[in-house]
Length: 190
Image (tube, rainbow, N blue to C red):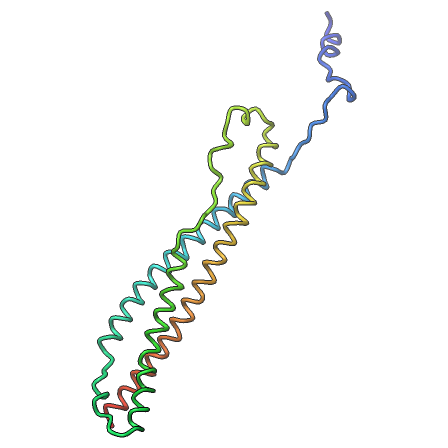
């Protein structure tokens, strides 16, 4: 047997005899990109939750501080109907920051609520799958990761919205607290 006969025996089958094999040359690159996006979404979730935890502790301290500093002793001094109306108005002003702090607290707690956060899981890791072409497995994983990242992104967007609302209400409460302390100082002078 000569060299040329050996090469002829090892020639690939004719194109008509081959089954078409679909290849995905960029699947591994796309898989690595979507995996990094998955990591970004997971870190984003952790960031929102840790920030919310810190702000909830701050809210607790603010509520405690505000409750001890607000003085309701001037309510006993109301003699006329105008003074009673003024006291009711001031009381509403005193209560407003507490309401805003509680609303902020609710929004920040919503950020911490446990929601279904998608993961790849181990269900598809079988011996049969290990026999599939590498780029086909990468393509399948990429599609699965994309679905997961899309769903997790929506959950994180909802957390971001709740976080923004919590911060917004906290700002309003802080401004109201400053206004109440100015009013308190004016009342003590009068």
